[in-house]
Length: 503
Ligand code: ZN
Image 1 (tube, rainbow, N blue to C red):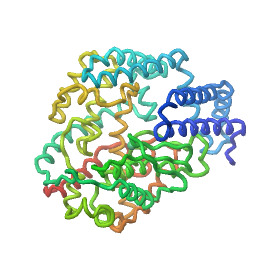
Image 2 (image 1 turned 120 degrees about the horizontal axis):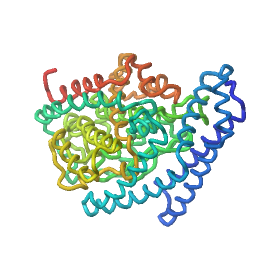
Image 3 (image 1 turned 120 degrees about the vertical axis):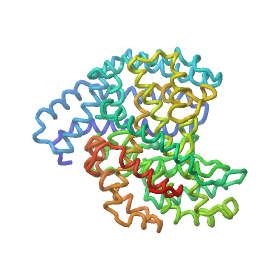
Image 4 (image 1 turned 90 degrees about the vertical axis):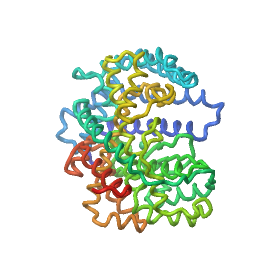
């Protein structure tokens, strides 16, 4: 590589990437094929690999080499300088957290996961509360160790959404919430009748699997540089941009699960496969933020995969070639109504693309208070229920269907939830830009041509990896940074047409 970077530093970067790849492999295997009895052994193996990665990253010689590269950066290419800067930031964060705190966090996390599972069985938040209290205290300590300007949450958010700040995020998410609440009311009142496509019908598992592979091929996911397998919770992992592993979940009574999981994960997978070859095995072969990663999965799953042009092509194929019995007599209109129902509900992961962001608003606002130490934990379930009633008009009958439904807080993942809403907002902005550059985008979709969109995303987003922070990348492509305007007008246009409302 003619980057001007010294070969010792480049080798260290490559080693760190290789270790991450192997951690990815062991994790993917753990979630797919690992025999049950091997779980404790795998936990040790992963801890060892993570320990090696940590040692290599905090090595003072690496710190010196990075500091040297950044101080006399004149001889470096732009990419080489960005690589050094990214790794320097990652290393700084790792160095600042004392080993004793890392250990305490790992213990508190496994304790909290156990307590969360027990609490869900008992349907009682109080069972989880002491473990969460401990984990929260440690995460606050960690945020202080990372450093911040008085807003602790920023230091945690930085781990998922580099460059984003509460002061930037809160006004956008609050405005979004205020627009969505009345919109959900209007859409619920005007919803077309959707047939129940899952009333005891059986959708052959093998046919589902074959259809998902067809979609992957049509989307341009390279199955010689990746694969699809089954897991309980679908995810995207892998070891390298040429080894991207997707999973899906096949349910005989509910084919939408496999269908939309595959499209969603393929959106993530295309991003990972799309990094320019010269970035492989460097810190630039990475997505700049979880929100931008999620924008790709949501663009494909919701904007494309639940849209009319896409199904004008695929629905006759799905019905006639894959499920001639289960879908006999079902029309395109029926199917579109069934996959686009807007309905306030209790559970985030079952919610539609309109109400989804209100679920995120509940979580974001509460975790911000928790990290600020501004909400006593014993008031959390009531605060949750009160917001669910105010934003969505529903009240959880118990904590398992309320504050205990997500695993994130038990993992200590505070700062993750808003990235889902960022994904929705960025997806609509990127889609608007794609439609601007590809005037016949809908025509392509109606003919089952998914490659033009993939190629556009690859050119403008994927190939660049971590060259720019997420919002800068979006601004470069769309002319605008984070905004709710594109997402809201996408929803108005789509559901206005589906529900026969005047624009
Ligand atoms: Zn996702």
